[in-house]
Amino acid sequence: MERIKKFSTGLRAVITVVYVLANVGLVVLIILLAILGFMQLSGGSLPIATISVFGVSTKISELGWGFWVMIVPALARFLIMLAGLKGLRRLLTQYIEGEVFSDESVSLTSRIGKLAVAYGVVPIIEVTRGADSLSFQLSPEMGVVIMGAFIILVAWVTDEGRKMREEQELVV
Image (tube, rainbow, N blue to C red; front, side, top):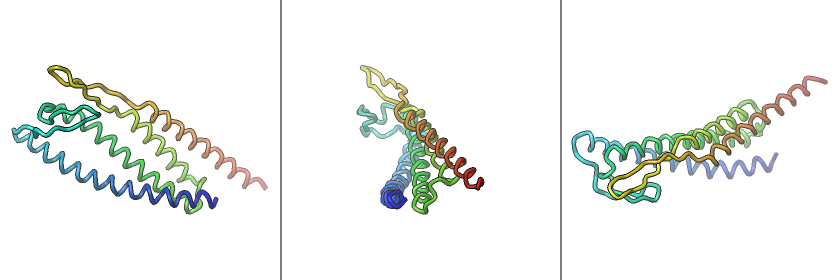
């Protein structure tokens, strides 16, 4: 149990730093998106700046409303990632407190698995640049979906083990 507590303490520190940085990034992203949205809705065009999206460099102004088609799923995936980090931090706190097989730990593990599945299913929009146009292609990440399904399975197995232990404790 001490190894679990020690490892969880270090991992929770790393997850906390990533979570804080991701939240700062989210605030900056929301501010930038608000500025871009205001520019486009007020009749102006998007900036001429070149961005690289999934390895394809293009000018934001050439994307038009396609820019928002790419940003919405990316923002959804980012929010799912933040929820997963928050859940993982809470789960590690449970482990540090010695509550490995509690109802809440099982629930958090299952929730993290479901968030991983959602993260993999929310499509990434890949942009490919043709001679005269941009084309969009959806590509879910099946590896992340499978990993999330495995985490859900581990949560179920842990829950069954917890229930069996409770039944054993009642039978004396």
